[in-house]
Length: 357
Image (tube, rainbow, N blue to C red; front, side, top):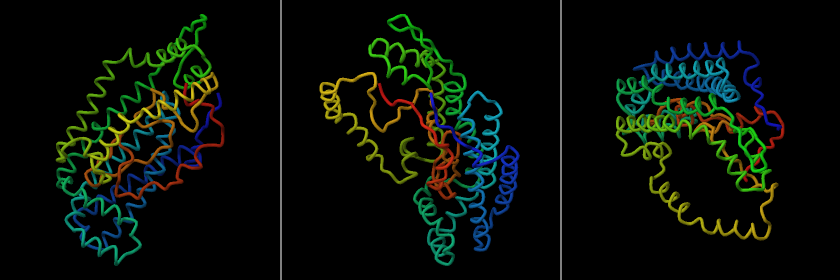
């Protein structure tokens, strides 16, 4: 089966280049930590924001390289170790700069608006400042922010455990089909296998073999889920949100009613879609070659964030959000990842992964 492969040499041509930038990130983290108590001085604030840009660029390259390489082979310990180095460096940076949000809040929105008017070269921070003040009631004191940043490795551990069990420790299973054939089912080939089988009982056997990993480890998965919920619940309470849902949606100023209404509509108004497929199946019965167009189905062994997608860089803490191993795309003091940052990373090559059965 042909697959698309990420050409990560476009980010770092060698391991040495990666290590050099990692060392540079640690050096600049120490520099940023030296600005504690100085952001009220305009010259220092300008220097600090310039460092933010530099560090953002470093993190974008380091994390996309280490994270995507780890996603390519979850059983490679060296790749996992490199990703962990970047995560630890990020956590150290957040600890050293835990003063950032409280000091900016103390300056006030009007002060920062005037700063941007006098220094238009920093206008790329205007939206970030706006979101900071939208969520300022959830930002803690400097000491509390520093204390909370020390727990960020634990807060994100649920996602990492899920990934290691579902991807790194995943073992393909055999499925016995109605004609006596034994096929080895994995997250890489299950849609191909299902697409070729005309009998529902054979498709069911393949599907059950795929999910055997979850059935045989359901207690472990249950505890991982509990760890994830309890971690988010703890931070929700620490920051003063009314719910975990509110904490996630408030980062982008989305009312809870919008999300809940979407769930309600999707749950109660799906009959037209069902009717469409019933009619379609009458007119053109589903065959072994039938595929839904322009869709991709996530495999059950994907991480909560799909491994098949290009990575986003990790986030810095701002507006009450946290940087953790399972929360890598939240709004941050960093400018957002450029839309085309991951564009050239994947080499040109077809993928034959089907999208439906």
